[in-house]
Image (cartoon, rainbow, N blue to C red):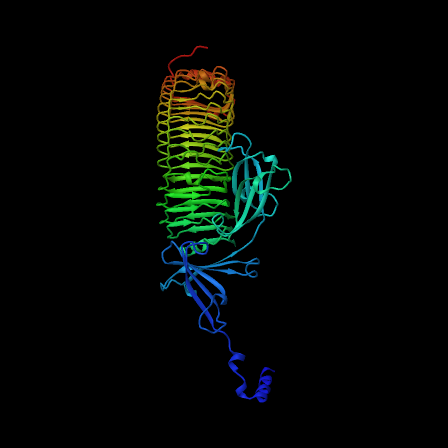
Length: 628
């Protein structure tokens, strides 16, 4: 049809009357490259590539002919460029967003060509309403003598209409009664307060009672900046280009893994939320991690395996009113150059906190937000650690392991810890001399293990009322177990073993019940077991290889045993278990050269009701007679 119309037109007007180029020609597509200064489009500067049609056919792309702009940004990663352009609403971003391309500038022309791109990221805009509240300010620093108030603001990411802790983005302290304050919001243009724009939240007191917050009534304000982009799914960084592309994102709906790369720094100030785990593992050249904008990690935040890493900063770095950075767990592992925890003071793990094989010495008031851990506290193999960093911790739902920290001298810094739901393990801390720092501990549900602490002199728990079990072994300088003035019950075993200078287990005045056995083995100087003088029942009593122990009279209140085993105690001359009435399962008294065998035989005849083959008496003093 088109060609029929053209033929008719030619016949009617002749060839001289028509310019075919005007009918079928198109304007040339042109580009223009200009330097882009450092700013919101390119943090470290770069180039702006403008494109469009040369509508006036003058061979130059004029400003009014530009229909699209891409930014090619230089980065701190040598040779890596980032190219960005805005995405219109539609696919893949319903509300628009930004396409970020990254790669190495292989030909060195300063322009990232398509064949140089190794990572492509779509960051979709998902605006969320801004919420704000004012509440009484209860924590220092205070800003006035009376009526301290805290303005908190953030984005309603989950759409529930409530400002949750992980949604908080800004805060400010001011002087007012929270009950009579008003709030208002207004758009904040792009500028020094918010690079890409956002919302200013203002608070004040309605002094003229017109129910409107006027300009003269504003006392404080906070800025909630617009999130740049959201990425759905896990983001894996394998090289510097991947890391540069990541800088365009604020929210990752999935995990973030930076593992086995050659990157030297991880600086992501715009990253706010990672809904899955965030792992920075085994990057041998990494020296610095800075995640100052991070407020939430839905899984574990784990940084490990980077020997030169000496600076880690997560969340706000000033004592401002912002809330903690909520993470499921925090692990710092195999970071020998990391000497301070001050950069992670804002982090508040919910489950586990692990500090393992770092260079940390001590950071004053580290982890002020860590008051309760649902999981485990592990502080292990920190060569320079002088003081524990959890001075606000009150409860641990799982276990506490403090082990192999060679210069740790006390447990100060554990805070007002009152309860441990699992195991309390204090082992192999060469310089530990006392358990100072556990004065408030009341309950350890599983067991307490104190082993191989070469300088530990005594073991005392002032407030402990209950524990599952107690094991004290291999402590070369330990002289006394106790006092434990509040201990009422041990649900399982107590083990005192291989403590070469242990003299006594004493001052346990309330201990009357043991659900397990008492093992007293290989303590060559031990003479006093008076801490057990109130105990009437235990599953078993095992006393082996204690060179100085002469008798068991402090256990004279024992009424019932499952097993009695007394072996290899060269100084023992008497059993002195005067209240013992029943031994059910086994009765073994052997290899005690000063103990008259007849004493053991008489006792067995009176109290043992178990199998005959489990009654063993021999290699004791068979000469000294016994009198009824």
